[in-house]
Structures are given as structure tokens and as C-alpha cells.
Length: 132
Image (cartoon, rainbow, N blue to C red; front, side, top):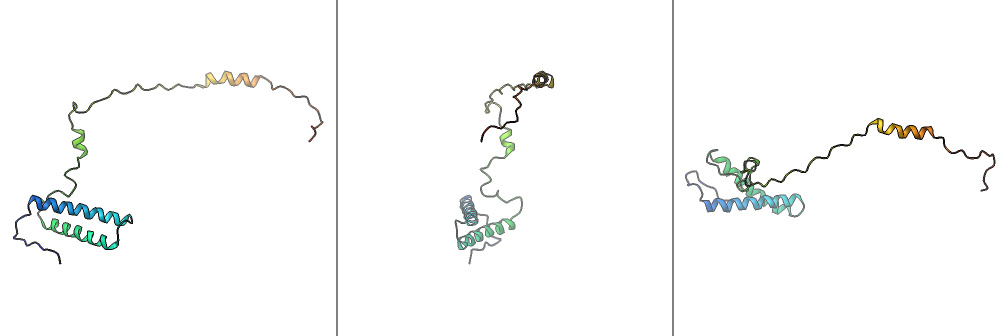
């Protein structure tokens, strides 16, 4: 069976917590690999047990004393990215926008009118058909 922690035991050290976080991240990857067809069901079940034990222990702690979820402390939130000082971000000038050429019906209509006024060249009308 697995190890059970007693309620009277002091909290784990930072080293133990780091090891546990790494184990949970690895188990999460194993479980994802199973769904992609790269791991066996047996490996997925073992990974799931590790994750379930982590969730169970986390649920028994007070909400205020819970450490962040594994892998989240390294990720930056969008707010932190937005609040970066302006000096750190190098801003490149925008390219000027192109103005749209407006094609009005007035400019196209004289061309169309000229084509309509010209009669097509008449072909000689004969009842004879060319030889096949």
C-alpha cells in the first residue's frame, strides 16, 4: 500500500514538495501519453494513482496553506506580461496604412458605355457551313 500521512506530522520540506511536484508533472505527462496511444493502460493506472494521491493530500490542507499547483509557479500570467515596464519592451513603429482606392461607378461607366456603343464586327452571313 501507499504511505499515509498522519494529521500530527509537520508539513513537508521544500525539497520533498519539489520532488512531489516533479513526480506529479511526470505522472501527468504519462497520462497524456496514454491518451495519445504512447503508453500502456498499466502505466496510465500507475500515473493516475500518483495524481489522485496528490489531489487527496491537497484537499486535506487548509485553502490558505496550500502551495500552488505543480508547474504553475513558473508560468507567467498575462497581467504580469502586460505590466512589464515600457522601457523593457522595444516598440517598433507601425507601418503606415494603405489608403483604399475607391472604384466609383463613374470611372467605370465611360469604358462600359464605349464598349456598348461600338458594334461588333459583322461576319458575312452565309448559309453555307464550312466542311467538316
